[in-house]
Length: 445
Image 1 (tube, rainbow, N blue to C red):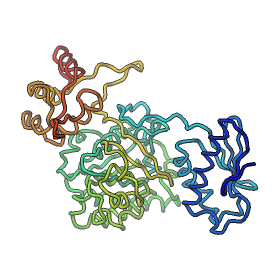
Image 2: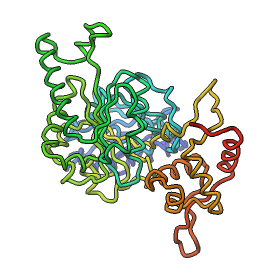
Image 3: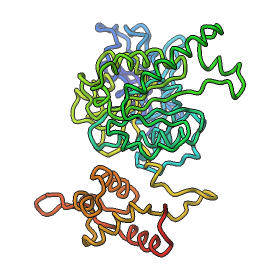
Image 4: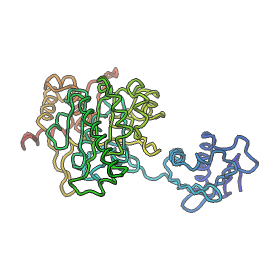
């Protein structure tokens, strides 16, 4: 055996031994940094490392641990996996604490934006989170219960909500109530959809929703049933209570209406039991908007890029969102005691349909065609302000289109001159070919 400080490994000269030592050193450092070891260790090593053909086995002396509950938590295992650079870690607690660690990090999926494929929806209640290092992630609105989404302006918050709405519309098992703080302009496209209400004033919609919540509690009480899931199991298709998802795109505007916060607090705290799931989103992640009263029962937190640590603390109750890539759609999800990084999908309204697992030729809508033609007329430059003025389209919408087209390879990244000043994006050959094919084949509706 070879002992180094508080770490003991087998004395072999193999590559596996050197990797095992490296894994052991990182693990020991993490144990010290998280303050789970005794302040005055005994004479024996705290951590032993053994090499096997396919993995290293780390044996932690339980007599040197002062915080056993932390060692055995899912959070500690998740953090250790991160410290070990993505290596798979399996823990056992039997006559000692054993960590089995793979020598090599598991292959990771790149965090790149991919088109939203609604065929991947595993149930009518699942909504897309995006691509993680482990693959695609979808979560059920029932599992998430009540959701807080926060991030800086133009970081992809509204696009994420549109992807959720598209998935829930496809599922056809949820009634949606939408508020965007822009007199319904952002969500106007959904007005004619079934099971859909686009509210210009949130207060009126909340009054009806609050009454519905109390009505449902009376029904469950009368039937001596504790949850909507149990109630629906005992009912036929026409008698079941459908779940309701309330989506508030800009919380700051919603709270300007008197009484809204009080109703939201009650819906967040009690609504999940009767199938009402609030989703609150804001581009102002500050404590005066996301108050402690609102945050208390928002069990799922999603943070897009934010400018500082304080904003991350408001959304997630921890730092991290200020450090992720400032890429639209990049997000951190705090759910089920885990923190997961993901890249949101490209919104469904720019994704071509699928047939026989092959993507059909993409089509530009009439509005998008106007933008593309305007860019060609501006010598191939897609400058958001110029294109918005030339076409009469809202600047925010043109900017969102530009970001999506960049992801799809239809526009370049923002170009800069020799002084570093932004010059705008350029049309690529892919978009030029698309304009020509749309022009010859007719425009999409």
